[in-house]
Image (tube, rainbow, N blue to C red):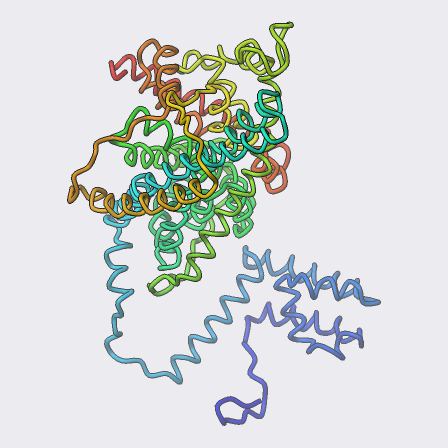
Length: 577
């Protein structure tokens, strides 16, 4: 063996304890009886790998003729060593190797008397401080949601204008060329597909802003610090900071967050973390928050959205404490080890990949799941119930959709939004949380009061799209100083609400008895906490099992109803409506 020009006459072996060496020798004796194995592997090396549960080598040994004798010897060795040391053998072996490396380093390496402190270490003294770490984390999260809601607003208005203007005009014109004007097909495309899918696509700029901010934090190295800081909080739940990483992933989407629980070695930790991940507010819920916060809390939109995300974290931690003290009593918490990478400037290519991957997934859902859901909802709204009208020519509240939604509505009456419109939107939210918005756009079926009568050409529409984008960019640049409270430009006040926003406001005011803002807040809380989408439920079944999937479905609905009830009824008692 050679290393750096030095020749070693003998291989370097890590010296283990007498008990471990005895078991290694026993395995070597069994392995040496199999020529197929010793022709490829060193018996000692293979014995150690088998003690460390190397799945590939285990499968290879089992496939060899006579390999069962090695497996039998292995099981006996593992049993004796675990009884002797009281923990997994792979951890014991790793500890001996680290000790060997440390002793070797001490013998050959001379360290300076005073260790140099780099920039990352200096930053970490503040960012990971025992007292300042969590406030800094919350402040950064607040900035993320402030940027998400404020900077993206002009582009949100631009997308809304493009969908409600040129795209609708082109669709109507094309259908007119096919002599389909005034038919149910026109209603399907305009009132169903464009209103439903378009109502969700409007919020793509908001989601891109969120993913951009999270990508910057992750690529800069801060997210690892967030997990380290949150370790102290997670210890209260009986978990550790490693469990917070799947929850952070859940901010983008609950499905990869659930898959990320595979990194947890302890099964109880994995199941408990998987049950808590869906309480993290995924990006699909963000359009609902932005819409309702803009309607009822226009001056505090960013603060409301941040509060909802924070409420999801607090709820998850509170439920974790309850579950750890009841259903998950047994089991010790494994220690949390994490490598903190040095801080670095985020790479544009990495950020773009992060943002595009998640945004494109959302767009694909819009043209698959949400498209299908919009068509189904439109069909149910076009189908008369009890013979009330003709197909595609009936009042929405007299349709099959209105009948089913009306039957469910009393469940939500104590929460302040117990009518068929809102209950229908929540029912379709089981498909995907974005569908809540598309259903609202279909249910309220509002039209612009001022309809442009002057026909426009295709070229004029394209020019208007480009001009609108430039205008949105300029408005975004103007809004940057406003985020930190510096008004460098003379604003034009709050933008005029759309007819959909006005219809929702009137509906909530009427349903809640004049307490529309309080009912809207309870509605957003319910959307935050209630049963996740079908794709997440399927991931729960795969990762947690059928029993815990059903526990999550009914448990989250009960928690959402209870918290929304407290928000609305408590607000009434405190005269906050």
